[in-house]
Length: 78
Image (cartoon, rainbow, N blue to C red):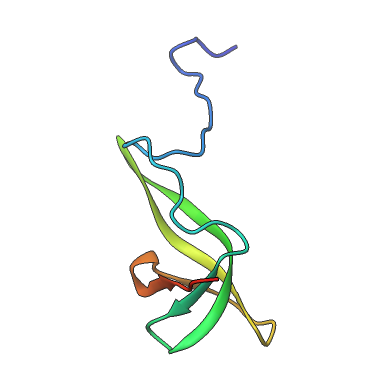
């Protein structure tokens, strides 16, 4: 059995209390390749003791999936 100190709760915020900037279903422009894609998921990364929102799993309009750095994305207005 784990001690209370060792048990943690998984939450959808980073160390600064921020939620993901890129939410599933959002349309984005990928600056690195000049293409438009739909966000599948943004990953919460850990660099102990900090956590931060980083890479984003994308699905391009042709069905191909890829991962991009969050700083390479720009939200498209709906």
